[in-house]
Image (cartoon, rainbow, N blue to C red):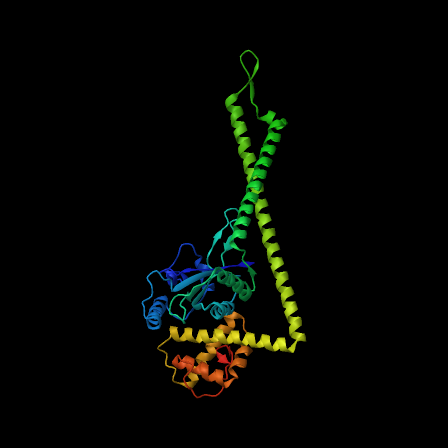
Length: 386
C-alpha cells in the first residue's frame, strides 16, 4: 500500500474537523471511537508564540501572507499506530526542522461503493506543524527535493510504499482512464452482440404477433409486437447489467486481495531479514533496541505533555498519585500502540529518565530537579497493579 504526505496552510476549522468537535455528515459515527488524537498545543496558542518569537528574533512582525502553521494529510494503513506517526514527526523535525504539535488518526471517513454497496474506508492522519525557522524567526524555506524527502520519510516511518512522483502519477491516471473506457466499450460491444444474436435467432420470431384480418391474411400487430420487443430489451438489459456488476465486484475483490497478499509477503520477508540480522549481529541488535526504546520514550514524553494539557488542575503533589498517573499513561500508550509493557520498565530503570518524567508530569518542565528513585511501574489487572 502506498502512502503520501502533503502540507498546506492549516484551515481555521482544522481542530473542529480533526478532533471531531462537531458532527459531520460524511463520517460514520459508529467508527469514530476508533480515531486517535494527540495535541501538544492549540493552533491559536502556537500562532501567538510564533509571532512573538519572530518579533523577538528578527525585530519585525510576521508577514501577513506567511503560513506559520501548516497541516498535512498522510495516507496510512488500518493498523498504523500513533507511535509510527510520532516517529515520522520526529524525523520531520530532525531532517527538515518541521515541528509537529498535533496528530489525529481518522478511521471513520470513506465512501460506499455504488455497485457493491461495500464500505471503502479512507484511512488517514492529520499532522499539524509549526513551520517557523528557529534560527531566523521566519517561516521555513524548502526546495522541491525537501518535499520529495517528506515522501521518503513517510514511507520509511510508516513501513509503506512511497507514493509516485507527480508526472508519473498523472500519466498512470490517464492510462487508467483509457483502460476504463476500453473496458466500458468492450461491455457495450458484448451487450450489442448478445442482443443482436438474440434478436436474429428464432426467439425474435416469437416476439412478432400476427393475426388474421377479415380476409384471412396474416398481418403483424404493430403495437403488440413493439411491446414484446420492449419487454425483451428490458429483460436483456437487466441481465447484462447484473452480470456486469457481479463481474466488476469479483474483479475488485480479487485485485484488492492480490494487493494485500503482495504487501503481506513483502512485510513477512522484511521481518525475516531483520530478524535474521538481529540474531547474527549483536551490534545491530543493540542499535535496533536503542532505536526502539528511543521511539517509545518519545511517545511517552508526548503523552505526558498531552495529559498535563488535558488535566491541568490535577493535584500532583503526592508521590503515589504521581506514580499512579504515570502508570496509567504508560498503560494507555502500551495498549494503543501494541508496545510491550516491559519496554516502559526498561526505560524507567534509568534514574535520569525517572526523575525527568516525574518532573515533566508534575511541573511541566523536565529540567526541574525532582528528587526521586526509580519508578516501579506495573500493569494493572482488574483494577489492581500486578
